[in-house]
Length: 383
Image (tube, rainbow, N blue to C red; front, side, top):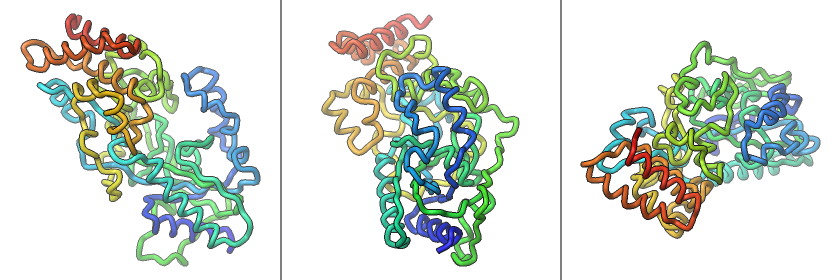
């Protein structure tokens, strides 16, 4: 098989495995990777030490002799409302509710994508008899999936730093396969999928350098303006230390006090910059049942979250991205959201929440106790 024929086969086989997008980029010196050292030097990575892995500078350092990167995407959008829709009504009620990021409503995406990438890599070993090596990752290796996806033509890196596909929006899980095989590069003009009626033999790919999708953000700054913590410090630059996703998931210590009120009701991740993005207004709904919202994942009651025991948390988080934040982190985040709930007497929930936070303020866990005490103070003295 020549490189173009290999690419035709991989794209078609990825579709058979129910991926929503598949593209190929040539391994090379991607200019975006040159910005990584400067971004790290600014301290924007916070406590995410794994981002300092020197192999991130080039895919060839992850898999020596790698020639191609296959990028697959899976849509995880659902028909549920966005976090920015009627937020006040959902936030201030007799049962104040928090917000879990849309990507964590279903099964763990590492498992869902990983099984399909593994199947695709297995099929490659059968279909391409020549000796070759492969490595695949779903957000677990020293490879920037977003940059690889851009060079594979799947979309552009937006001002909020996420990948946007013009037809599917940004609700996309990404996985990559590094391979020593030579594939032809895909490009934005040929994706997301060819017409289902067109036969595979009619597809054509270029063996030249890839042509990434053009940046279609234009003059729009909705994502920057909507970020409540000011994490998008300038277009295309994210200070993770201020990002609610980082604060609620990656940060293991106390959340900086000046960022607690702006966090609102977010308890795991944040969708705001995607919720306001015009490219997501017509994003299709996923057809993958494992990514549908499980019970209590969509706008869960904050009192329930804050009262979870460690054993109950393990049960709730089993097979879910929620386990990333750990029990302490989720209870900590629920305390902050309760402090931001706006509850006031004579709401029936007010007395219950004050009692619950009072118990948590006496917790032997110093992190939980600190955030519960902060929440108590805010509810009792909102000024």
